[in-house]
Image 1: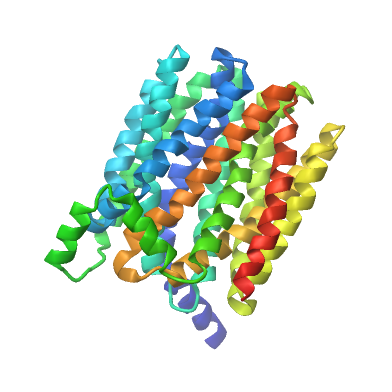
Image 2: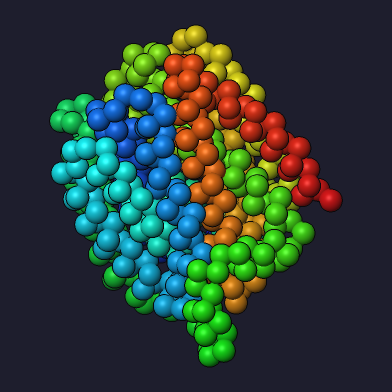
Length: 404
C-alpha cells in the first residue's frame, strides 16, 4: 500500500509537466508531418541538394534571430499567451503552404515559419522548467521528452502514408488539423495554470529596451555559469545531426536505396521510437550518476553509428545504424536540457532559454546547409552522414569540459 501511494505521489509531481507534454505531443505530430514533407516538397520544385538544404535552413536562420526577442516576450506577456498565439499562426500558415508553387514563395514562407515555431518552443520549454521538481531535472526532461516524442513517431508515419496515397502537399492540411487540435487543448487546459512572477517595473523596462540587443543577452548567458558555453556548443553539435536526419534520411533513402515515402516515414518513425524508449531511463540515470557521463557516451555512439551509416552499402545496414544514431540523441538531449535547467536563473528563464535554444537553431542551420552543399558538390547524398561523424568527434572532446 505504501509503495502504491509513493508511486502515485511520484506521478503527481509531474502532473503539470504531463499537461504541457500532451499539448507538445499534438503539436509535435504536426511538426513531424511538416519536417518529413518539406524535403520531398522542395524536391518537387528543385532537385539541387544545396538549394534543398538552404531552403530548410531558412526556418532555423529565422529562429536564431528571434530566439532572444521571443524569449523576452515570454517573460513579459506570459508563457501561455505566447504559446496560444503561436499555435493559431502555425495552423494558418500550414494552410498557406498547400498553395505554394515556386521556390521563392517557399523560401519566404520557411523564414516566416521559423519565427512562429520559436514562439511555441520557448514557452513550452520554459513551462517544463517551471514545473520541474528540484533535484529531478533529468527525470522531468525525460517525462516531457518521452511523452512528446510520441508525436515525432506518429508524424512521419502519417506523412509517409499520405504522401504515398495522395501527394506530399496534402500533408500541410493534416499539419494544420493537428495544430488547431493542440490550440483547442491548450485553451482548455493550460488556461488553468499560471506562473506567478514578482513584478519589477525597472527590470521590465530594461527588457523591453533590450528586445533586440542580442549581444547583451548572449554575453550574460556566457558568463552565467562555467558550463554555459560548452553546453551551448554541445547543443549545436547535437542539432547538426538532427538537421541532417530530417533532410538526408529522406533523400538518401530515395536516391541511394530506392525506398518510397511510406517506407521512409516508417524508418523515421522507428528512429523517433528508439529515442522515445530511451528518454526517461536516460534522464533517470542522469539524476543518479550525473549527466556528463551519459552525454559523453551519447556522442561516442553518434560518432560510430553515423560513420557506419555513411559506409552502408545496403538498406538494412543503413537502417540499423540510423536507429543507433537515434538512440544517441536520447542519451544527449535530456542531459543538455537538465544542465540548462540547473544553471539558468528562474527570473530570466525566458530570455536565457531563448539564448540557449539559439544553439539548436545554429545546428539546424549548419546541418542541412553544409550537408546540402557537400552532397551537391560531390553528388553523394551519403556524405552528410560523414559530416556528422566529424562533428561528433569534436563533441566528444568538448563534452569532457563538463567534467572539470
